Length: 137
Length: 125
Image 1: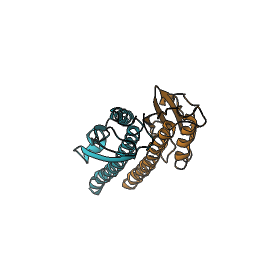
Image 2: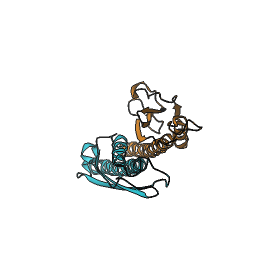
Image 3: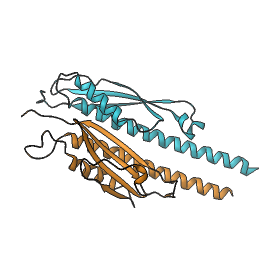
Image 4: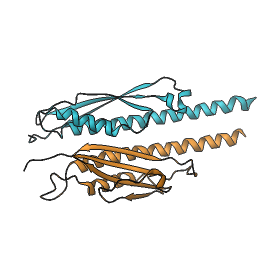
C-alpha cells in the first residue's frame, strides 16, 4: 500500500510540476502578447491601432514549446474567450480584445498533462492588460 | 506502524513541494504584472500623472487571478520625462492559508518585484 501511495503522490508531484511550467509559459505569453498589441499595428494607419493579430501569434508561439499534446486555438482578433466550462480538455484558447484604449490578452483552457483525468485536470485562466500606446501624426 | 508514520510524512513532503511550486508561480505572475505596469507607465504621455493610472490599471488587471495572491502596493510608477526610465516596485501577499499548503506554510508571505522601463526620447504626448 505504501508503494502505491508513494507512486500516486509522485505522479501528482510530476503533474503539478508540468502544470507550473505550462502556467509560467502562459503568464509570459500573455505579458509578451499584451506588449505587442499595445505597440500598434503595421502600416500607415496602424500606429494607433492595437496589433491584436501579432499579439495572438506571439502568445501561441511562446506557449507552443511547453504545451505538448495540447491544441492551441487562436481565436479571431477581438473575440472574447469562451467560458472555461465550454472548452474541451487538452485545448487552450488564446484571445485578444480591446476596451477603450486598454488591450486584454487572455489564455484559458485545460492543457494536457501527465494526470489529465476527467474532473482532475488542471485549468488555466491567465490574463494581461496594457494600455495601447498612441502617437501624434 | 511504519505505514502510519510514512504516509503522513509523504503527504507533508508533497504539500511542501507544491508550496514551493506555488511560490515560484506567484513570483512569475508578480514579475509579469510589475513589468507590464512599468511598460504601461512609459506608454502614457511624458510628464503626465496618467503614468501611475496606466500602471495601476495594468497591474491590477493582470494580477487578479487567484485568491491566494493578493495585490499589495505598486510604487514608483509616476510621471517621467522623455528618455528617462521608470522603475516600479510591486508587492503582493501569498496567503497559503487559502490553499491546502497552509498545513505546511501557515503564515502569509510578502513577495516583491521590481521592473524598469525606458521611455522613448521622442515621447511628447
